[in-house]
Image 1 (spheres, rainbow, N blue to C red):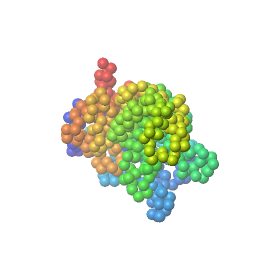
Image 2: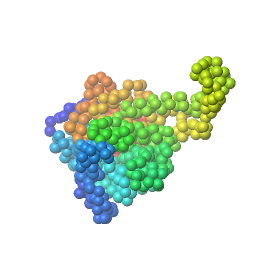
Image 3: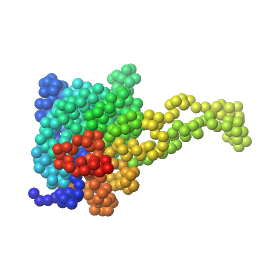
Image 4: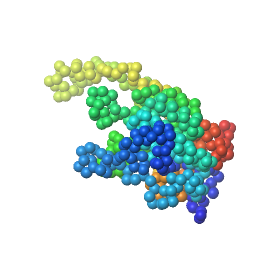
Length: 484
């Protein structure tokens, strides 16, 4: 096979390339066999009761509706298709672990961490028993399929999180029984608004809120985060908000797709910070995948800006009780003119409103849970606990590197191979490297992007994560450098 440019680039690098977000394509009949083993034939029938295509997708009724019906139901425009369609060999590569292993050098990848395609939808399967059985079956299937290729790749376990208990049960099984070492947690769960579910249950499906598992949640998810620390797994999220909230155009998939991973990542990340998860679990590392790093830079700056003007001390300075009521009344009477003329009798009522707060002082410090005491504390959280998945074609990746090294957000390389919008798997590393060739980032920056940060994300939680893999030696040397 002729050497690709990606392979040539890899041959010149003095470090491995770790892909943190490739995608596999699932074979539905095989999955159904595993589902039958886990839950019995009846579980397969329950899973199939909702008509599904080969992607496990719940039916997109959009395609069966007339334009008028789409408007009436506000049915959002789904993705056109998901799987590779331009290159037959790439399509097969995403389905067949043997072929992927064979082509890894062609891609310039030393190691890849594989998320599913259809399997991601199982995280939000609405029926609890089906969801739990399906995730168990899927994780077992993936562990069996990829075990013999552990030197070059590993699949990610699906961890449903409608409750902490179901998440912990599957996390334990995936890691201890199936030997999986990377996991995906959706980062959000859509739940019916309680009063609607209670008083108008027929409308509950149309009145939902997004539970972000870390702030204002329906459950205490701290036991889940504690279990991640205990088992040595990073909490990686691959959620999206396609079809929810403002990402629900009835005519444009492009509109719905732009930002859908970033919005979900930002929401989960913001909840993790303000909910104090990183304070209570300072060693737990989170990764927010496929949304890039631009949203993270914006959120980082926004949190600092909000803290500077809205921390408990600053709120004390702007308490309405601080107003000198007498002085204010005198100034209004002296300079009010026609503003108050004929309305003097209501001035006292207005002044009461100016100087009265209905806030409970005990609830004003919204940074109490995360323990932020100075702006620099946000830097410690964002730079120590968080990693941000970036695709090769995202021009904003370079934003992570345009600050001094000690203040950089940890961008990590994700190939997204296995999906239709990667038209040539062998060109992904080539595309990622273009920012080096264009002089936008340096070779050391690129090393951080494709090796240092990906390695530390997982090895930082589990030093043995890369043991027995093609990158074991390089990761060991990296960790030794960090310890010096």
